Image (cartoon, rainbow, N blue to C red):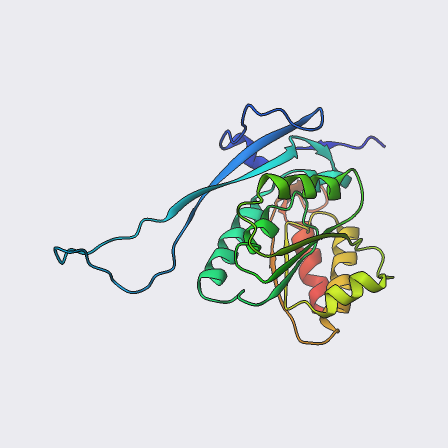
Length: 241
């Protein structure tokens, strides 16, 4: 059976690509702009007693990524869920929700959301499966965004299908306060393995908070003769067990 290639829908919505030369043939380097509020809730006035409005700081996250991959390597692309999770992390960070915290990202892909978390957290542990050069890509992207990263930053392998964790990874998991994951729900087998992974992590002390962002993707199936979201339904069913 042929393995189909997929492309993230965000590439067709806006051209984020730069003219920079990527490290690997077939990759592109994109810049994703975002506004970073300064988080000052108190009104300030200038010398004429006029309201002095602080403008959000404009930033970009530079990411090298693939423009298309097969299903097993979708982590080499950037998906919409990373943007939403990034916005949430900025909100949490501005309100002190990540201050002094250790953040663990599961299925980090290109590392985009880990870099946002690293603006505010004490430490970020960025994990994904060691396949297709994903971990090397995260490390490269961390170099591109070194000015944004304010926390300790560590890249480690973590495969959802294997919970036989080494001592080093287990120690990091035990010290984790916040778990994040974006767009890891796209295949039933991967989803089942992901649920098993987070169950094991959440059973470790101290208590942890988890934020999961996913896009509810609809497909038309002959079985249902309708547009359905099977991966989303599988995710909910496994959560209910």
